[in-house]
Length: 274
Image (cartoon, rainbow, N blue to C red; front, side, top):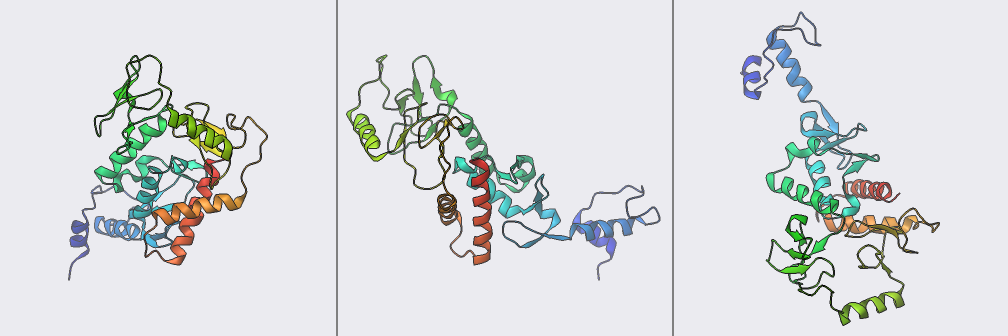
């Protein structure tokens, strides 16, 4: 049978001081270490999956809510695919990357840091190669020549009109773009005033965040919070939350886990679109 001292060694607990702890000055070294191990094994409920997890495998948000390592990582990774969920929040408060980074592998960390650069870029450029369409980082854009080079496929794109790169100072009139804009107007779609991209709203509220980071009202097109247009109703936000959960949740997710995730996404959509 293992002794308490052997158990302490196996867990690599590193508090080797003889100073008194909260447990009291009369405790021996072995007793203090046993008390530490006991505290480490205390479990709390994850607010996302509702599972009970040891406290050492949880991230605690500033608001006091606790995420298990798996759900915390998924929360951060979901935000890299949907700017509406970035940056990760809970109870309207940002969740620092430092709380979750230790649970993420190098690829996940790199993906999140890449998304941070992408979402922070005001005027985004994407590869004009339709088979690629990758985001082009600002460092790969020559502001003088407007040449944006895609690091993924090597294609050069005009950072102004986002078509294949051209040496002319004026961007060419693209018939397909003109026809798209005419169609958009006839269908009541909105155009981003910052980058001229056409936006169609299917679910969610009227607070639009373009891929260029510009925020505007879908009803009138003016900068967000500068009009009196009504926000979308709750049903449309719920539909958007359903889409996100359906897209990201595993197929074998349990009903109560799905409901918890749906509530989480719904709350975040409300927070990010106020």
